[in-house]
Length: 304
Image (cartoon, rainbow, N blue to C red; front, side, top):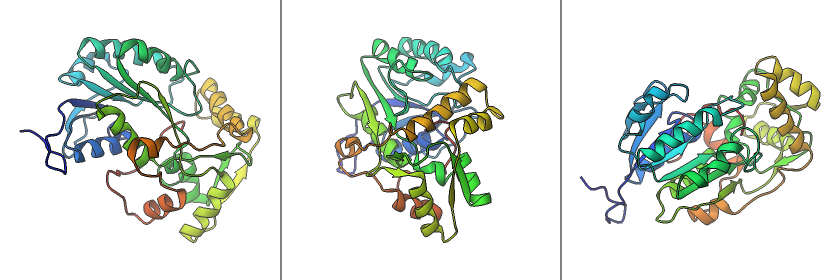
């Protein structure tokens, strides 16, 4: 059966393997691809059922399942393994297999805080253009859903009415995961791949104090942002995650305090034709329990 677009024209063929299809951006990307009439293989560790998609088992740490997951796919959306300080060790062998299996387009989820060749997923970013003729690297700023989903910040807000950072008064162009997914869909399906990295932000840069103020107004419950030093944040994180990863995450907060993330881009508008969602609108949408098209339940993402 040939899928059609809302205009009645035949939709382009091709099957996308979405890795992390039950996660924050993967679930939204899967839903939006399906809504566009695309064939999707929804990869997750438990091969969870996803309406409209073919569920497949995928685990970064189980290479024996790579070929089955890739079968029939010509493009892939890559969500790195969460919390792994060296994702390239498992991702690069998979990408070699993907190319050999016929994948021709790869879209990688990275972070605005990690440049090409930088730590962690930055090594995968550097390798991607040499592996695929069609590619894109999405480098979103920090997720708005960190304050409404199952991220540590959101957990603290729900239980204590507070969250902690070492970001000081630094501002961030927080971005809606729905907007990330909308860009991912374009990068995966447009006739011409971006073949570049794309820094994604929301419409304005906000401090964490600004975020707390908006959440207080929207929820009707006081929310406070507690300021930690870089050292205190690093020690706090190192109590629950590997020290090297804790140092990297605390360093990202320090970079925010120094102004590195105080920017906005027009990427969402350029690629989707509509402006990105603002934080107040997202907070109202998600804290009220309603969700827009292509939105799935929030799940934690470890860095951005």
